[in-house]
Image 1 (cartoon, rainbow, N blue to C red):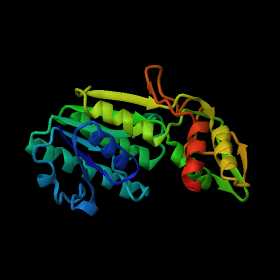
Image 2: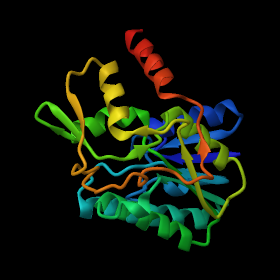
Image 3: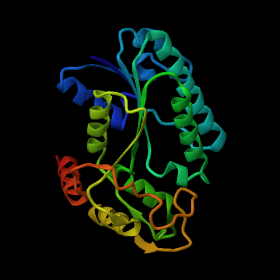
Image 4: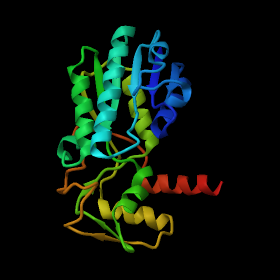
Length: 253
């Protein structure tokens, strides 16, 4: 089966392409570097020839409200238009758990617009909503740093390894369209401050992590369960401590 991965050279896309090829699929890593640009439409018609599935794991280079909305709306419209012309039978998109609860952020308003365009299209689809990746824990800390303190809201999070995200997306991409949303998350639930504290300690980062009820997450006020998937979520296998250990080994090597 030919599967085109839009954003196929990024964090999730590169892992997904490798996994699909290991399972015998013809996986095309499509990105501007390979001459395929979902924003301009460049290279899409050629890339989608004979494709059964298109997986969109792209992300906007800018989180500024107007720019991120333009990115997701333009890219998604182009993909759906070219897919319809090519006879693609399954559109898969990676989104974020809790998107509808995070609409105070322009980024999540753009992700919701992307999801709505997919749902209103005639192409069978699957939307995969994932929790935050372990790989972005340091980024959360950096965004939440005030002096030498990292201030985080009193919320739970069920983060997962990017490798598990790619595996989940791959399973869904090679199955039948669900014409709905699937949630995926990690096997453990942490307080947000606890997760970041563990992540920084593993890096020997001296910043102090503080649970602050007034703190925001990407500019959004959270309640305890805003970032958690629902009861029916499919859970990855990688625990945070194991991921930290593997990451340290990879860095040392």
